[in-house]
Image (cartoon, rainbow, N blue to C red; front, side, top):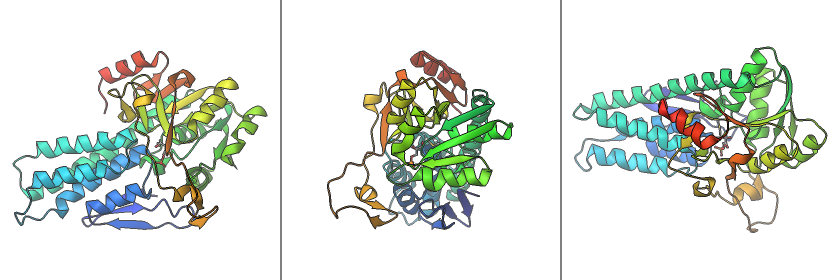
Length: 347
Ligand code: MRU
């Protein structure tokens, strides 16, 4: 199923808020529609956000009207700014927009039609490259999975989160394809249930055995010896190897550490920001309190009750066993390993 589709000067985004019950596409004819879709989690997952924003930026060139009121470059800069502001933690968003800005610069002096076509081609290229990166991660990562394993994953890191194969879930898919005997534990991932709604759905479709648990059951499963390894994605990896991922990942990393369980993080290098030195510098997105007060739009507590809703938390690099990237498996010391991985350049 396509996570996004370009058709007749419009971007159609699979509305992930409606899954698994309804498969609906959100038509975006303006870049601001794409920005709104990213903000409201219709499209989510760090790499998918980047791809959607790339198409959103291309769409801006189609939205531009040559009436002389605003210069095209000013219009494109404003579009990039608005798209970038949608979700502050995901590095892939800024990475993809930087790529698109560079593509725009390279089209300098061309006609509006050539710029539109050129930017659209650049967005498709980012999407295709994403899929290749997922495939590379899947084959590196599958080598770490034993022939029989119970794996705890978190949030949703599948095709829905990247538009390709997925990061952590892409590895699980590949290991399953290789005939490994897997059982996946899927915490529901409050507040908006990416685990229960999206990961369970993707695993079910792929025929991979899984068990859904509530987030507070993870400790129980570890304590009963039910987990061989943890495999999660990331939204931002700092130069030190500290990384941010969906709120609750830190708790899982501490549990894994206590239970001597390998804790793997799968992410392309486009999720790494070497200018962010440690986890303390990672900007954490705070979201609408209604996400905590409600489930599926239904109020589950007191209207207006005080709420904390950070979308991500930070795992210190000391709790990470290895990063599985599109450039290979990185082991500690991570600062050196990450810097070396970048020497060859991120694709
Ligand atoms: O808020 P979301 O759904 O965008 O959060 C997604 C995650 O935390 C994923 O684990 C992360 O983006 C990696 S996805 C390949």
